Length: 403
Ligand SMILES: NC(=O)c1ccc[n+]([C@@H]2O[C@H](COP(=O)([O-])OP(=O)(O)OC[C@H]3O[C@@H](n4cnc5c(N)ncnc54)[C@H](O)[C@@H]3O)[C@@H](O)[C@H]2O)c1
Image 1 (cartoon, rainbow, N blue to C red):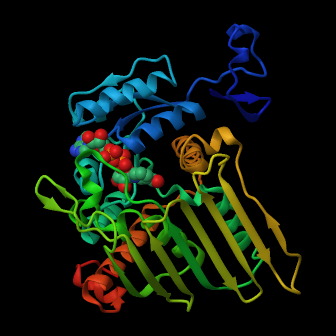
Image 2: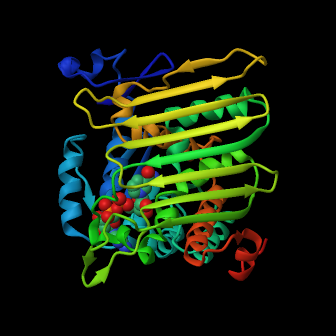
Image 3: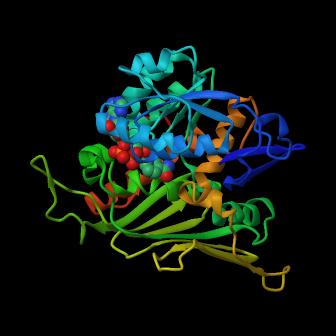
């Protein structure tokens, strides 16, 4: 599978039927050489997704990997061989992976608690950097990263790619660009899904390593919430618990302590109110956003229910009453894009990363957006831990983070 260029337009085709053609006979299916080469640090679940998606998009070639776990490297090599005939370089140290002059960029795909330390080494390379979300497990670390990003002379992109899921991309278009519902007043987000998956070292079962469920997983939704509110959060209320999942789970003598369900309310400086509802013991993946403005309401959902006939189901309604036309739709990408990872979001994240490496501006999340998504997640974790309403300014002040 490759990304093909036809007279200026991008076109992707996955069928094997045209492999009999020699390179010189290709015009419609002519392949462009990748513009960039990158190394992947941490080739677990999302590292492999980046390797697959980057290769399929075709603008960025995967050069090599560094991982502290031999099995991850073995499996990543096997998976990569399904996508590309190129040899993957395996580095024996992070420094070697960062300083190889053959590469333009580094993708940091290690667990949350390692991000700051890994970044401290990677940033010395001066290369373009893509870093997975959440930027850190602690507020101070996240702030330190935003400070490092400020003076950095190359791209530093954060992996908040849900903005590119078809339902959110369309909601952004309707609400923020087209202003179809007028001024945003209320935002509701919901994620109901299966429990956290297994990870190398089971880092996502422990608040200490993940930052807590509302930071680890839900920073995506708080990023969307912040984006649609177009304002800074000021107060966070939350309730939640480890009601069902991993209650008896132990790994290397430590007991899991992560939340699996929560209700979070966020108040914004501009008066917008937002709510988030999480359930991680639902037999499906279901995400939903409802945004009410003073001239209408947008609702969008993405549902994977694991039924036999399943293809990703999406639905969207834009209701504008007597103000302008209303509509219902099913936002989608071509199946080969949706199937490549995170329902197509990672595909467009890679296009944005390549565009940014090429010096173009994109609509990808900024490091500041990454920071504010961690701020809301941390405040929500803290509200649940203490049973108190969290004042964001007070929380930042206590963490010695200048406002
Ligand atoms: N953007 C998204 O939608 C999305 C989805 C999944 C995961 N993530 C994020 O990606 C990161 C990795 O998650 P994952 O699901 O791939 O975890 P994983 O456990 O499947 O893989 C992590 C890999 O990193 C390796 N590793 C650990 N410490 C390392 C180090 N110091 N140096 C090099 N390699 C190291 C592990 O051996 C493992 O192979 C996390 O920050 C997670 O939150 C983002």
